[in-house]
Image (cartoon, chains in turn orange, green):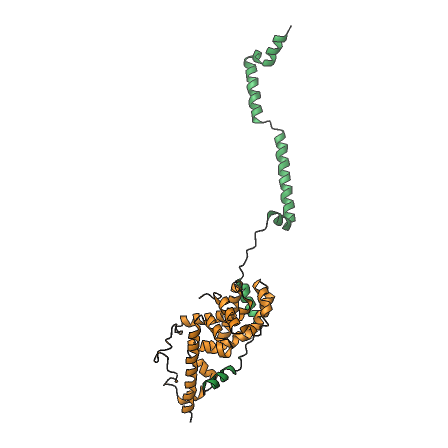
Length: 207
Length: 109
């Protein structure tokens, strides 16, 4: 999907429904001038919103360099398509959608993204336990929550990162990922379950 | 670990710091802008740029024009020459055919 499409109304609606408009948005005054082509305003917008976007991408991309590159590409696309953004308050969610779409495009090319995972089929999800070939030492090393998140498949990692780490309401996550609200809730539940099982497994495995 | 603990732990994870790199982004944005080709300079602009050359070319053109005019002044047009030679030929063959002579003869007392 082309970045910038449909996100405006969805993200704005989600923010207003979920109280997202109360979220501090010091970057808001720069969106309008940036849309008009004011490069200085876009720079201010970039510097104000970059840390939040990087925080999300650093958890989703393969490496910090990959996250930095994706963030820069997202801002380039944002600059190109800013005229399509009708609600200034939706900029933050719109930017995340652009970045997530960039990542998803790459994952699809690498055939890493499962488009329609059957969340309800019990045997459809990958085994949450570490690969049998992994040694006990490796299991011990992967103890942190960060690592557990990183081990999640992309379809589960996306809503977890956006909802819990980026503090986006479920409705806005649904808008960013372009999936129904129920699917977001389902994937969040599945992801939590996998994380809990990961730690349960870790605790049982620990000497 | 129960669900609440997990959610609290997820929410309390510290943000991963990232530093914006405006210089890099600015270069990327500059590359997006269509490179406008400069329009070729007009004749007037080119003349302003090379005044000495313009002076030499103008002087040469003036000299050529004057020379052509000078040479043209001493030469009679071909049509005039053709009429004149035809008239002289007619006078030689029949002097009375000259309209001036005929008119003079008719008006003579």
